[in-house]
Length: 428
Ligand code: AMP
Ligand code: MG
Image (tube, rainbow, N blue to C red; front, top):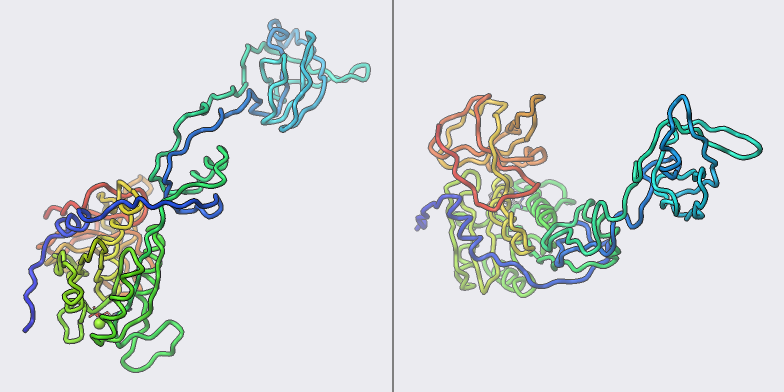
């Protein structure tokens, strides 16, 4: 007998998942070179002032402002250039009136000087084997100087724990001497692709078979979300080997993703496997297209994500339910995809019985309007459109087709993320 499943709304499914998701307390130390995309387990402080000393922000002359008080273009003052100093060198102190130092960008202010005059505002004059500059305007104390601590003071808190390490974060880590950093341990996410029809990427095509794209797609999504993907291989649709492989793998992973086998077909064994494992099924039917059969179960605190075998449904299922759990594990406070409005660029004539997530490409018009364009063939089995997917157009359940130019909801893939689950779009 076919089991009757009752669909629940997407936000309800997301809430059930996030309620059980936990932030990890396990940390490890990595070198700054290894830190890309990792999550800070400690806040970052400034270990010194920035700039660390008063310095010149440009190529010019360090002068004593008092010398320039009466300078005009008619009566320029003449200053003797004592030496030329590049960044990284320390100038000799300037002790007498009428002296200046030629300095390059980043050079520490010479003792005795208190203003910087850029090259362009001076004329060089050679006299008696000495070099002088003519200055035609007055400078005040501090003019054009970059002051010690003007950007950041020693001890300032700069980046919170829980932040993902980007190129910009790495610049800060390097500046403040963080050669090694404490980061959250990445969760290990096991992956099985199920289906007797699956061929591996390097196998030639055969009648009745298809290549396994889900495993590689999901592994990439897992890594992109900040976790470690451990691909265990593909499983034929036989109950016992599937059960044993899945149950063995659970000893070594923080979460497990399977693709395929969660529907009500004769060879869809995941529901029976969850039952035999004693896992608690949070839901097995969601009012969404694609991916209505997406199933999430939990066993002793380990999540089991039963994603659909259909590539588009699998992709959507990961983004809606698995990514938020990984992100929460890593301490993110914005684990869900960002929801916003955009203008549809193409007609979408299909009716929408359930909330629909159309694989789409986000864009901007010249006047700054966000746009969303469905990419390619829209079926849950579609694989090729995934290559161009940067957002989901979200259409409300129970609605008819939409026309280009209409305002619709979108979920942006990647980026800042959102604190809250999907807000179901309103029917127009
Ligand atoms: P299932 O969810 O197992 O009923 O599979 C649904 C559809 O997705 C079937 O047409 C499968 O052949 C296809 N499929 C299942 N697993 C994969 C996979 N790993 N890669 C690509 N397609 C798959
Ligand atoms: Mg299958």
